[in-house]
Amino acid sequence: MNIHEYQAKALLREFGVAVPRGVAILKASDADLATDELGGPVWVVKSQIHAGGRGKGKFKEASAGDKGGVRVTKSSSEVNQFVKQMLGATLVTEQTGPAGKQVNRLYIEEGSEIDKEFYLSILVDRETSEVSFVVSTEGGVNIEEVAHKTPEKIVTFSVDPATGIMGHHGRTVAKALGLSGDLAKQAGKLVAQLYTAFVAKDMAMLEINPLVVTKHGDLRVLDAKVSFDDNALYRHPDVVALRDETEEDAKEIEASKYDLNYITLDGTIGCMVNGAGLAMATMDIIKLYGLAPANFLDVGGGADKNKVTAAFKIITADPNVKGILINIFGGIMKCDIIAEGVVAAVKEVGLKVPLVVRLEGTNVEAGKKIIADAGLNVVAGDNLDDSAQKIVKAVKGA
Image (cartoon, rainbow, N blue to C red; front, top):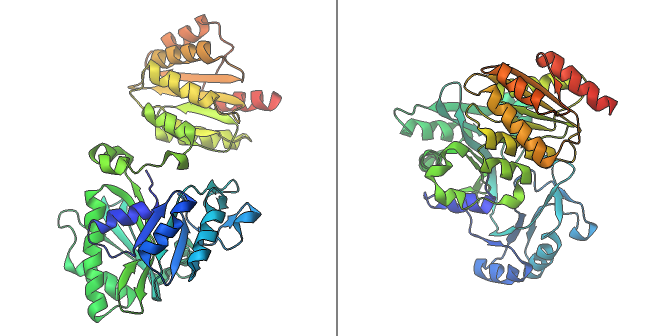
């Protein structure tokens, strides 16, 4: 789960992290209250969407101006002008894709006199099962670009969960960023605060770009991007309350209600698979035969009839879906349960596109019989390769 920048900063502030003062607004009439509270003389108006590259982004509407999604001004009247232009407009960045995202929230923040910009992020290293830090002197730019062009400017290290954060970790960050004296002490304190917040809130990623040194010699978090481990959200109702469903795909929201792992893609073949690895293989083989998947959908190993029915409804609700491939290998999941769910869903919502079903494993014969006896217009697949070829041929033929 992702949250907005202003929400991330408010959360980090609870752990003592130094962040600039700011006010989030949802309507243009609140702009004056925000500027009065912050006092100036410099204000930054920031679009709040779940995507990076906002400063370099462009609005689709000409009326929104061409200054990007992050704007700096010394005029309170200009703050009002920017707010009116940006709220409700669609911002396109490298991460949103050409469709962009509508800006429904803005964050007005006090200006910072920046002397230096750095990059710092924390994430879970799946290979070592440790929390890893990534730091670089090249802040304010795309870290992937830095990794490609000047990888020697990136320093990474991991924190052993048995010991937690220690003094030498802060010193490592200070050295990597070329900080000494009081700034090095600030870096050590900040590293401990960020690690504590990361672990306490079950974050999956915490990215600060940029982390800045002000001209007054203060280390401040100027931007913050935070995502959380969905599997741990039940422990954090305060984090769940921060969820902004307007930033998410409606189909993904519906899928989450049934504990389905669903991600919308831009292809034409809807996929229902059990197991993430098998789902990835299914998507790959669809691409191999010339078309693209419309979604990633893992119904999981313990899905019941209701889950399968819900999954089928979500797939068919996508207008881009021109064909459906169901690929189930029954281990814990039983093929007859899948078959019952498919039959129930088809009878309820209808079937307007080609459907190929490949079942294998536990209760496979019972599952095939259920589908055959239902009298549905379904094509049976003998194996994954055969099924992929059949659905691609059916869609291209249609």
